[in-house]
Image 1 (cartoon, rainbow, N blue to C red):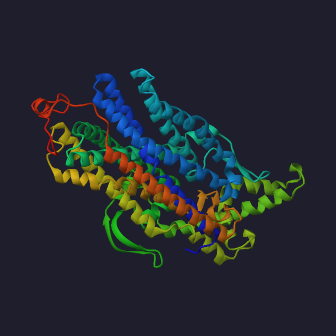
Image 2: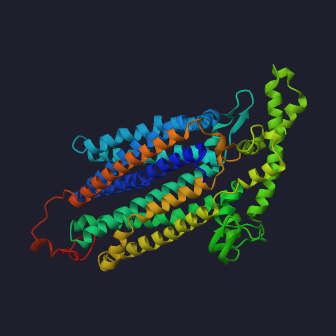
Length: 535
């Protein structure tokens, strides 16, 4: 990668986005788990469930605060680093973000305060309502942000205005009901539920291995295993829906994920393993599963999945049509009034206006796209191929970890139904080691979604190369180094606070003497309650 202004701006935003996304999924998932635990407390009156809600709530609070701090920085970057992007699509993109801030975030933040300080001031049912509002608010925040992001992947409900040189909302309902946005929302939220479930499962396993807070740990593991299994299964199902929609709206992304250089006869095979080489346009040592990609991507045996080379060839036609729209736009803008616009220019723009973004790809090579040579058009067409190797392996790491989470949560779910959560210490150790893995899967998914969209910041509408602010490389380097230093410090502080809270553990109600409670069966978890890691 050449470290020009575009590359540095992308690097800065990618770094802050990936760092912010460390906190988002855990916040979303823990909020729902807290609501489930407190619901059991209200229904049963057993104080152990209140203690569980308070303990996991402390970890939620630490994570929530860090997520807010890092998320605010990202919104400022739109105006500072991506000023032309903000001008070009701010009318569309700004609306969901504004609604998220006014409705979802303030809702969540208000009830977070009541959650922590309202235990002794609200009734049990009142506090339960507060906890569920926190969970609903966190999910609504994700909804509006992903509506904005989904529009970047599939820009519907908006039209380009040649007078203002901006994309403007034509149908806000289409923006809200964008199928790509809805699929991204449910997939991302389910991934957040999985992150939180594996986190609770792993921390609880650590307690069981050390014989600490056994009652809380066993109950927490039961909730996490059941909730995590349902979440992990839904991630796979909803991820399949996202893949299907990508086949419709982002064909180049799908072809790059599969490193499919040439179009294959339908139904296309899925490349389970291989080493893509973008320079030679080959995938070495490829292992194929017949028909699988066709079934997943098109849900049929007869629909073709185009390869990268065919898509590049089609892109050249899109670029040439885009040049017609660009030329017509210049004619329209030179007219002194709407009445003076030549009819042929107006007709050309109406016919080819949706392709104008492809003409803007040539801005990387020539100031006036109409002066581009055939060689420059060919280069611009090949620019539509994102980094294949990164996409290929990011997708497979994400999918492989997703399958592992299903097996892990299913195993502990079965053990919980048999009252044998601590029967196999090695499984508890696996659960502890697995704690960071959902974050890796989530980050890989974000890379697939965002890197796979390149070179577009708005798919088919606005290339990334023309969306940046006119900043100096030195300024960007200094801010990147500053972000690295500040975010590293924040990460270390957050990890220290989380680990301190986990080591301290929950504040539980005193238990009867060991002789008394060792001999009695626990009606909720079954079996004899004993001291130690094998309790």
